[in-house]
Every structure is written in C-alpha cells, then in structure tokens.
Image 1 (cartoon, helix red, strand yellow):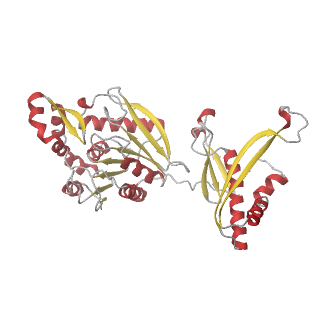
Image 2 (cartoon, rainbow, N blue to C red):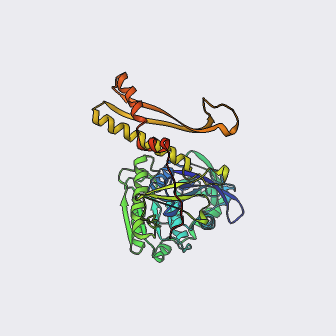
Image 3 (cartoon, rainbow, N blue to C red):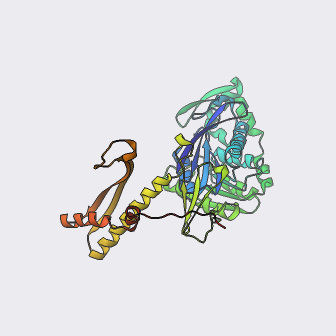
Length: 403
C-alpha cells in the first residue's frame, strides 16, 4: 500500500488532513472515500486495516479527519452531523479534481450515517458500505446522556468520549434531530452493504435491521459475529475490506487493466495524463514503472533500472532454486541482494568520467543445511542464470514504429 499525504479545504476554508492509499502494483480500478467513527480519526487502526484490504484488490482509498479532529483544522465544538456530511462532499470534490471521482463510499459508526446522507448528494457514488452505523443520527446522544441537561441549559458541556474531553454544543444536538436518515435511505436506490456485529455494545444490532429494511434492493447484510464496535481485531477489519472489494466488483464499474494487449511478450504504455507513471503487461502480468518524486515522477512503481536489476535478481533466485531441487540440496531460502552503480573499473587506465562503468553487485543469502562446497557452487551457478548471461554477453536491440 502506497500512502500519499494530502490536504484539502472544507466549506469553511479549514484545511483538512487526508491520506490516499494507493495500490502499489497497479493503477487503481476505482477510488473509495472513507468516513471514520464519531470523535475518531483517519488513523484508527481499523480504518487502516480496511484500507489495506481494499488496496490489495486494486481499490484506492481516501481517508480524512473531519473538521476539528486528528490533524484537521477547525474547532470540533462548532461541528455537527451536517458539517460532517459537507466535509465528505468536499473530500469527494477534491478526489474528483485531483484524481478521480469516488465510486465507493464507506462509513464507520456515525461516519456510516454520514455517508448515507452524502451518497444521496454525490452522483459518482455507485456503491455504499456502512459498518456499525446508527439508523438515526440522534442515536449518538447516548454517548453524553448524562450531560444533556447541562447542554440544553448552558448551551454546551464538556464531555468525555473514549477517555478524551470534547465540547458538545446545543447546536450539535439540534442538528442531529433535523436529519431524517430513514427517509434518505429509502430514496437512495444505490447498492448498499451493511456490516454490523450482533455483539456491538455501542450501536445496537437493531440499527442494522432498520437501515436494511429502509433501503431498496440491491442490498446486503453481513454479520460481524464476535467483533467489537471499533473492529480492534485486525482480522475483523481485514475481512470487512475484502468483502467490500468483492461485493463492489458486482456493482461498480471498476476499470480493468486487461485492455493492454499485444502480440509480443511485453507491452508498455505511458499516457499523457499519468506523467511518468507507465503501465507494463508482461505475459499477462500487470506491473508499473515510475520515477521518484524528486525527478518528476509519482513514485508508484520501481524505476526502469529497478526493474532491470529485479529481473536479474529474480532469475538468479529461480536458477538457484532449480539447481538445489535438481541436486537435492537442503536450501530453505535464497535471498538475492542487489545494487547498481557507476564506478571506475579496477583496471581503468584513467580516472575520468569516460572510464566509468556500470556495475551490479550481488550478495547471496543462503539459508539451509549447506556444506561450504555447496555454498561455493551456488555462487558459480548464480553466474549461469539466463538474464545474467544476456546482460554480460551483449545483445542487439532493434527499434521500429509499430505498423
């Protein structure tokens, strides 16, 4: 998973902090927008684990801190449920302008209620997922039930939520009451998947039933049996991410990478809109090449030289494995460490720049019950891998325009 740190402005010109998780080995098939739980942040471990599961399936995820939370600007006391929905709209607008409009929207707890409202206002959304979400925003009032009288009388109160102090104003309470979420859900008519744990002690399972019955088909419900509200068990969060990715494939127009076709072994494509990011399809396998940000790339893939050196390393490892299998050598693991640099040859007559040569240095890390003789032989065999021979014996490259 490749993380890109970004900031965007909300409706009140506050700068909100966000992370965009990118698949490391392919161009995103779609973008998802994630809303965290009430008073949480984008860095909640469950959010990270769900994002990783999605990016492993090719879906990029933008997660951000709502106004006044985490690393985002603004005063939490001045926010409410409606402002959270507005923050989501701004986040979606940022994705659309800088990357691609989100097709999937995911919300956890009160964030789940917020995404249901936001989805009704975002034309790009093709699928919605909620996790432990309340069916009515006022449900969140139980978190500060003991302070409601003070809030109504004084206009605000300091409350402790999750062991942290927050100021809750009366406008927050009033705003919760002004949102008719069941009506919004009934009018959505977009694919919806509802995740909820029967053992959720923060948001009762009856909320999942109410969301489900309010929604039109296609709709799905997934029971997170034995999971807690915050999905603190990594397996639960990863499961949610994997299910969303598989489910979304049925309803979302995911961009496929299979449009790179050729009658050759490899086809490579660079498009104007992608900068230096370059797609590679090698015998049906999808790869990316790129350059570091310092030279104008986006650093979403290895450089061409990284791929060249990797090819040599992979060929070396495969050759040693085949040799060990053939000779029945107890080779548990082989690691090939490689580095490439330009330096003067040991026998160079001069030390000017023209005498610099390309060197690839290889170190073998061999694990297993091997004798010294076998280890020495492995070094000899490493020189015999096909890619090694190609690079050292020389080759001729022909370039012509494809007709």
